[in-house]
Length: 429
Image (cartoon, rainbow, N blue to C red; front, side, top):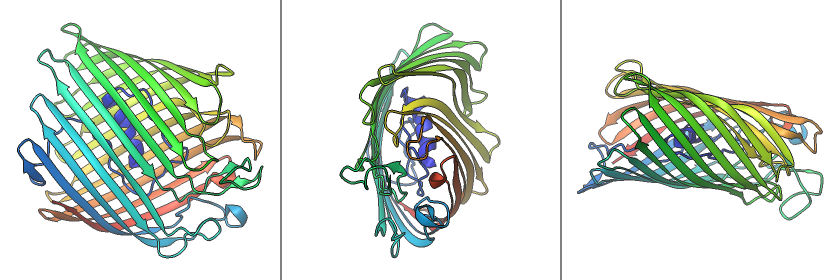
């Protein structure tokens, strides 16, 4: 859930043409987002060495997971996994280097989940799960008011959810034509750069280029690569509102198809900054997709939404959304359309107590019929979360959280419901 929010923000902040998300992305741990903003270090915490600030953090928690393998049903291969109570440890390290006209941020994190006993002996004797990753962001501004940014992001997810993909009978899978119920450990990498420069008193232009790569250790899943570029223009209409015109294109290569795919899009919209803190952008348009050397061509509407609002001195809101074509990670010679919309609220109850809540909607539609179930797959994922954090010491706070998620899929094995509850302590030095 938090990964989706972070990646939506990454697209807007860096000019990334397209950042891949997982085919069934409902992580159970709030992983840190990529560092892409030019915010400074928190003066209340961290070790300061001149312009460099290093801030270590450690989260320790206990959790209840009603469905750790993200499966549904009650009998046979589609039965729901048993609920568990587990323990989580998440160390993290933040770096901020402030050079005046430029600032560099870096973050490294690891999450280790421990499940006492087997999650589900039907699949694998798994009692632990690891996530780890790092991100780097550099932002600087020239005296002529031109803004540059560079970003890099890597993440590994050891996933407990079984992969509902037909096996070809190769290494790591079951007999040909059967469903491969192995885990889809996922690696993702992204790098990008962006430039925003003023053309005149009321006009500006931005350029972006990016490369991303997704790969799996499971041969039943198909990684893919994306090389993309963006070009955007902004024209001031009023003191606080701009007209936006954006173009983008992506070249994609998939392990599940032999040829290259090409996507392209054009959007028009508005951007505004009603106050010093609030800002939002809303654009809509059309996109096209030439899949696998043009063997299949598709067209659809697309949109891009991003916003941060200060509703009051205590209440703020965020909204992010996008629609893209991408190769399928579970089916050979197929692609999907992915729509994502995520919104959240943050409320400062007091100087010590903060609360947050949000919802993530994700729709994914496959172009081809599923080869095993002979029907077209549609996934509709919903994730509702809430969290409260109470700081009882300068370096320590306690937190509680709840996450209700599910997927209503046209393929019954992919349908699931899940409740995740967590309570713990956060130490930030």
